[in-house]
Structures are given as structure tokens and as C-alpha cells.
Image (cartoon, rainbow, N blue to C red):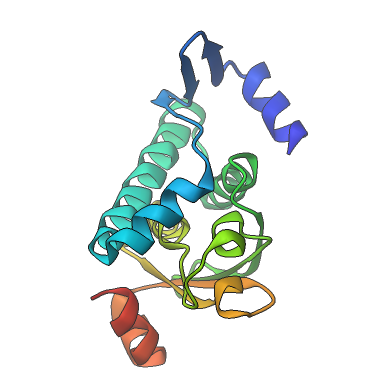
Amino acid sequence: MFDFAKKLIFARELKMERGSMIILNQNVAVFPVSLFNYLIESDPKIIPLLYNGGKESAKLFAKELIKKYNFKATQIKDWLKNIIEFAGWGEAEFVKYDQSNHIAVLRVKNSSLAIQSKKKEAVDHLIRGFFAGGGTISMSTELDCIETRCIARKDNICEFVVASKAYLKIKYPDITKSQFQ
């Protein structure tokens, strides 16, 4: 993680001043994970907003990487994985990245959101959206993401599948229905 931060600083893509932090021309803020758990637990209607917000923010990051550094698909996927870790959401790894079939599977160890959640269901909606947005840009087609395993449900890891919504509906009908209400 610290190597990633050093790279950001060296490339002048992490800027911190009093009251401001900017990564790749996006203002970022540090909030306790409990804020997101509170929002999800208080009003489940916020879930689509978190998902879509995560998706759009990943698209912005990825487009900036392409514009400034001419990043290719694998570079984008690696950078987005690193930003998840840098931001403290957990330790991410790609289990599968199949660009020709537009499918990716990721696992996140120690998801900070899932560990603190009181819910007994998949809760990593912001991360889901981030992975969907990153997949959409890196694979050049509109993709979505579902969480198939979650620490909040007492699974030992959080697992995400990024693919077209049509594929997700066929392969994971119940999960897709519950996560895209």
C-alpha cells in the first residue's frame, strides 16, 4: 500500500493541503467506515446511490488514467485494486480477469465495512459499484457487479463478480435480484 502511495506522490497525483486531498484530480475525503454502515442500516434505499456513486467515481478515476497516462486494461484494473486497498476498504485480489468474455472475479480480505456491519447480508455496495465502474472502463463495455460472499454474512471473505447484468441475472438470479432492487 505504501508503495502505491509513493507512486501517487512521485507522479504528483496525490496532493494534500490543509482541508484538501486530491487523487487524480478527484477530491477525496476520509470518513470512518461506520458512516457507510449507518447509512445502509438507516435507509436501505441508499444502497443504489452508494452503488452508482462508487461506479461513477471508478469511471472518473479510470478515464483520468487513460487520458493522462494512456493506461491499458490491466493497468487500470491493477490501479483500481490498489486504490481500494489504499483507501482502507480491505485487501483486494483478482481471482479472474477475462477481458474477452467481460467477466472478473475479485476477493476482498478484511473488508472494513463488512467486519463492522451489524447486518447479516452483503454490505459492500460502494465497493461493488467501484468494481463495476472500473470493469466497465477497463473492458470497454457496460458491466455491473454483485457480491456473492460477504464477511457480514459470516463468509470468510468478500467475493465479487463483475459481468454484464444479463449474465449476472442468469448465473446468480437471486443475488442479482436482491442487490439490484
